[in-house]
Amino acid sequence: MHTLSDAEQDLLTVVRGFVDNEVAPAAAEHEADGTFPRATFDQLGSLDLLGLAMPEDVGGSALPYRTYLLVLEELARGHASLALAVSVHTLVMQAIANGATEEQRQRFLPSMVTGADLGAFCLSEPDAGSDAASLTCAARPGDDGGYLLSGTKAWVTHGGLAQRHVVFARTGGPGAGGISAFVVEHDQPGMVVAKHEDKMGLTGSPTAQLAFDEAPLPGDRLLGGEPGRGFATAMAGLDNGRLGIAALATGLAQAALDAALRYARQREQFGQRIVDFQGVSFLLADMATQVEAARALYKDAASRKDAGFEVGKACSMAKLFCTDAAMRVTTDAVQVLGGVGYTRDFPVERYMREAKVMQIFEGTNQIQRLVIGRRLAAGT
Image (tube, rainbow, N blue to C red; front, side):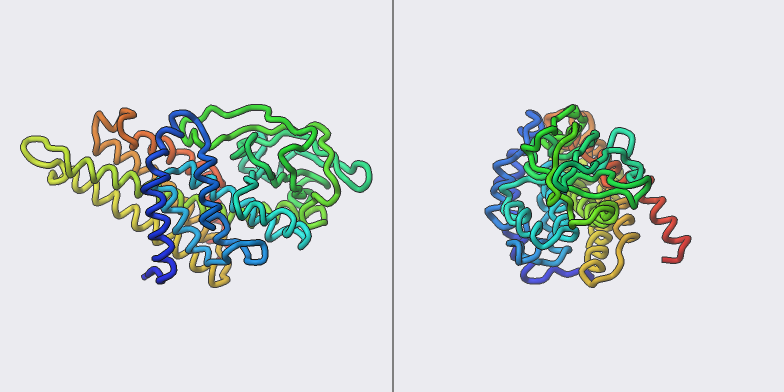
């Protein structure tokens, strides 16, 4: 049984209060207007909630990864776009923390831990999504030991808004070994926003294509100071990111369950509450079971990670199950509400739209099944 420590319980009490009073009440407006909740994101920095999993030497709290994920779930319960912002921002910080030189860590991370600089993770391309090793964005040697970056990055969360990007580009031959990572700032010459995506959900989270045209990068922007290390950095980051999405999906599913329960306890038909009808109560029972199972799975994977075990398969399992569960639970929440659930007067239709993309980003769920199957075949 994964009981909460006293420290986790105290932290979550603070976070839940913030979510209920500040985050959730503003979520619908941000999603309707398509605006990023930057002020709320900054508040998270002020509350020291952006660096929970970061090392202390760059201003972080160095808390267990499980604790960070519990906070992420709570944020997603209030506003999925805000929780996604924290997850992606953390993914970028981890790529720098784990793949950078010490000088780069101290230069780039402290301002991200406070939230002053927002991060973006630039891996996917128009023709390189699941097959990340085939990316074509390239950085060729330039003057004075620097690089000239050219190509297009797609599906960039915080594209056009972030101050700091980790960009993966080809510096060598074909395949994973020819990929390097670079830190690119928001005012980089030769970088433009090529397209803003008009999405069906998570509209409070900007997504864009970024185009680079011979963008000149100083040599000290090469992450880790050596070429060819980018793909390993990306894959390690995606394991962490998949756990983040698992927690995020669980929080979204919890929000949908809560909304369905509130409605079912209040709505009356044929002289009784609809929650007392067996057909509805069975639906709610299945939803609650899915949420609890999802939470247990991601917490177990996080505990394994905190204990130092290899968790690639566990991360894929958590991402797969939690996001599939979120899709089922949010869809069933619409069903519980009936006709009004299909309207924008209630949040469950938004939850259902938001859940769909969670089965797609950070590696589609088909890719997760491929990863899990290969690990099973290999006996690992």
